[in-house]
Amino acid sequence: MSGTGKSIVYIISAPSGSGKSTLVNEILKLVPLLDFSVSYTTRARRGSEQNGKEYYFIQREEFERMIAADEFLEHADVFGNYYGTARRFLREAEQRGHDLLLDIDVQGARQIQQKLADAVSIFILPPDRRTLEWRLRHRSEDSEKVIERRLHTARREIENYDKYNYILINDRLEESSQSLEAIVLSERLRRSLSNVEQRIMERADRCRLSSMCDRLHPILESFRNLPPQA
Image 1 (tube, rainbow, N blue to C red):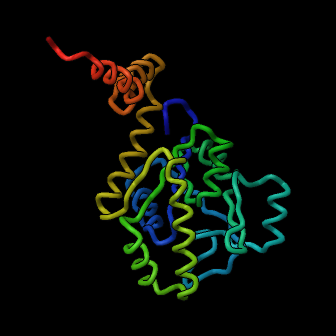
Image 2 (cartoon, rainbow, N blue to C red):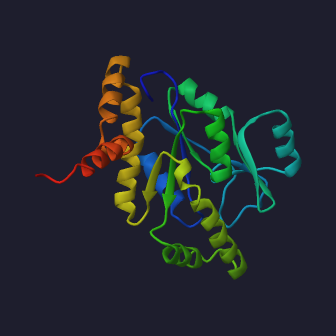
């Protein structure tokens, strides 16, 4: 947890089949004081899924009662089923002095970002479309029609990459896990800085090449317009 005494909320989004669930499981092993918010859903259980582990499986009427009672930080209707993140998980994480990890889609991420401006958002990408398609087919869970629908949904979701603070390309699991761990820990370090330390970091960051591009362009152009040397 950051030095501010406030829980950091980490949002992780990714197209289905990008390996997000595996990375989430890895980061929960690697990083202490990090809670995971189990989403609520109205969809039916699949395979060996357990209530309270992968999701909280509830009836549509109960979900709509929770919406009416404003019990969700975010919720969305995805392919005819509700998914949502209950507010209580953030309250409970703050009471324990822990940070909170949310595994949610692009719709849900947008809602969280509107309510929690300082949430840290991470978008996980597959190396390419062919790899994603291979992963979806080898999960042996979905029909051809569902796979095609997931690929088209992935294309739409990926268009939102620039709404996220971090992009992580999940090519090799070990490397991706270490990168995700670095993101989580670096945000904790950044938020534990004093006001003076933060101002120093921000002033230095303003001089980074990536931050200076807009200011550099007119300066460089002005030198290009020098008349030839006599």
